[in-house]
Length: 301
Length: 238
Image 1 (tube, rainbow over the protein chains, first blue to last red):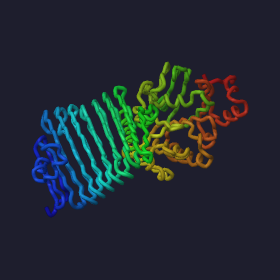
Image 2: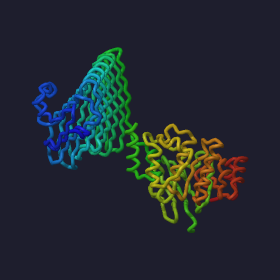
Image 3: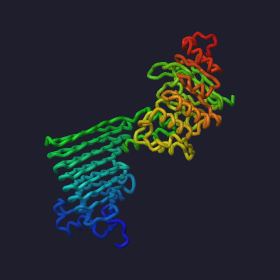
Image 4: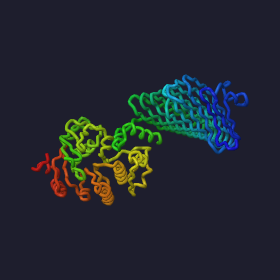
């Protein structure tokens, strides 16, 4: 334990491959947490079969990492994950969910709850790398207590055939959340549903959604910000259609129930400019290289 | 014949179903500087884009050769590999991509430095670039591509006299000295005094109607009598 520089959890198919703990951070499988820590039961709806539990009790100065892998054909994962950060602690989590190979026809269902206690701060980097025939459905809820802060960065480097990504933020008083989603569609059907519920007075929430529709992809993104109290929210959705066989639908929704709340949004969908493409080809890049460069620029915007 | 780098024969082309080029003939030798002079909408920029392979235009007749090889239907990136590079009059912005990133991708280890470029290398390509910055950026990209023929589309537009002088100094040092051929497209003509072309062509309504070794004479005539005079000239090029 003395020289350990990270805390992590690694599951392959249904088996926990590795657990590494450091002082002040409890890491276990969710079924173990259910048995060992009675208080976790209010977060798990029922006794979990698999998944991870991370409880950050003390400040650590390195990132936490979790990795959930599908490595065998036709695996059906049904995970329940729980991450709890105690008061005033700052943490960073690098989370990878992936398939070891293409064409494993895996199913990855994950329900997660992430509890940010008063004054805590979490940077949550979530990366997906899936095979072409996988079905992936994560449903994460972030519960932000008073004065807590969340930065959630999601990116799917290799999209599965089907992705249903659901994210809900419950924002407590003076809490803030920044959600950055980079969604790539390629031979895939993707549904993104994110909601920031501004429930605490003077809470803030920003969503930045970047959607890229490559060949044979259909992306439907539903983004909601609602405010019941004086609060501020902003939604920034932009889609880029790269291929004529792709489709992007954006459904931004702003719900305001308090006259002192301010919620704004901007949304657009466009295609790659022929002029930019020709310009880069006249700099020696192939059409594919030029498209990749334009897309990488779009995702950085 | 080996000395001929670019040969264009009876080139006809259209854009948006409108005939723009109506039978262009042009030959450029290695190390030669030629100017293409003409009014707005005469087909200058279209010719530059077509030589560079812009798929937007439809070639309806004629052929283009480079170093003896026919390239009429070649895609733009392959033309760049052969050594044909275009400096755009109004290059588009590529948001989110730094100029240094593009240079790294296209230069393949070749390194060129232009002192004036260091301030905007880390900025997004052509996003909020001034006129002068755009031209320097274009020049830097061109040099990174190891060209044999560089087409400058209105490099003198949007530049004040000081910047024009600076630009032509770089062109002389990096291109002319290295025997790289140049096609200068202009409707202003001021740049010709700095680069002194071997041949000046006049294009009007999609046709090259005059070729002269004396650019001063061409400039003087057009300044005095306008392009209409060229139409009536008994020494018409075609």
